[in-house]
Image 1 (cartoon, one colour):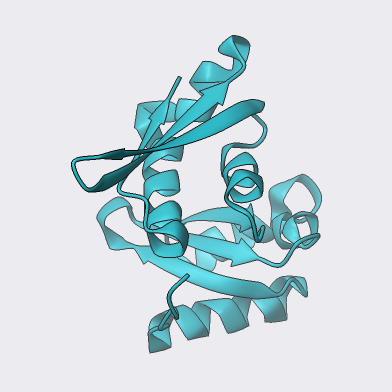
Image 2 (image 1 turned 180 degrees about the horizontal axis):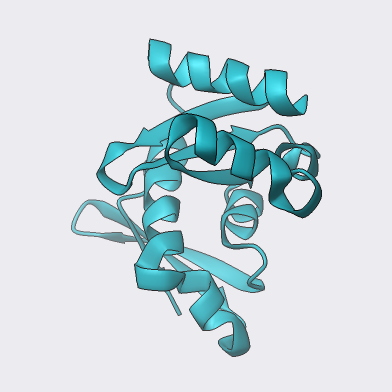
Length: 143
């Protein structure tokens, strides 16, 4: 994993998350293209970050005027993938090198395929951003 450089904006967002929720963000990705902020929180902090019935996320959404995504960090690729696609059940992953590009195939329970892809491919887009940053993966495909 390469060293991640945070912008002042990302650091401000991480401090805000911590102040409002008590959850510790390890990383923050501002996805301006989709008007969202993705927080990578330390293991065990996702519930704290989300809040009862999503109350903390709703407060952050109002304050920042952006969609908020919370993902729990995991050291290993498979753990991180499972956290990104939760609540969909990830049955396995396969990393393939195609013409110098790293493509990750995520095998999910067929009943959870829609959840794994997300509305308009939202979950897959988030997975691409996070996995590029942490594991230099170029593409993510759901199977």
